[in-house]
Length: 229
Ligand SMILES: [Zn+2]
Image (cartoon, rainbow, N blue to C red; front, side, top):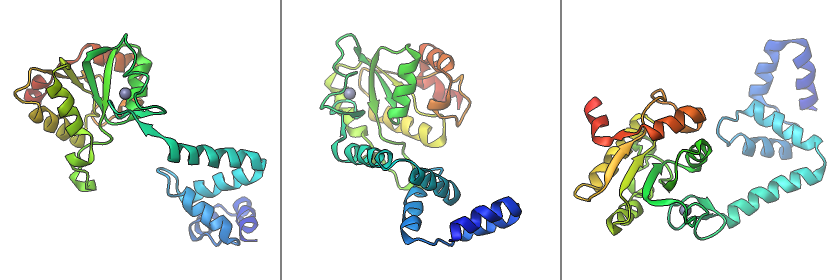
């Protein structure tokens, strides 16, 4: 069996393992398929994929069944909140339906990870608008691939008094902020951007809660951030 051979060589000669793992001479087509699918996930190379698949193989079969059914249920049944586009089990998410939240304040974020990160700070009591990504011509993501038009429609309804841009401070994030800012021109809406205690290029989800919480409280008018650039 090729896999056993790999493990054996692993103990004997380190350099050789690398070659064997890259070549990945599978003894089983089933194993090869599973590793291939696992390695499609972001940040998972072939070697890690093999390790994870072999780990799953050692677990009781119920464990793998629960994992695959959780993923399948998620895929088949997941909804996106009709108002903020966050992942939700119901038509309108818990944040949007919470009467204690300030609906005049809307924080624009890329995805659910940012919502979770900002919620963890406990410093924000408004609603969110989840764009579903950032404008990125390199990756073929234009404004129409995101939920920008729905944000503009909401903005025109007049309930929003302030929009806070909380996208990561990358070129794509800045482009997206600016695009939305231009779309809102002429509307009576204050636009601000979170203050950057966060280094440029850092993603929100990696910022610590205190820094992120402070950067929301100390947000600055968006127009000022344009002058700074
Ligand atoms: Zn919602």
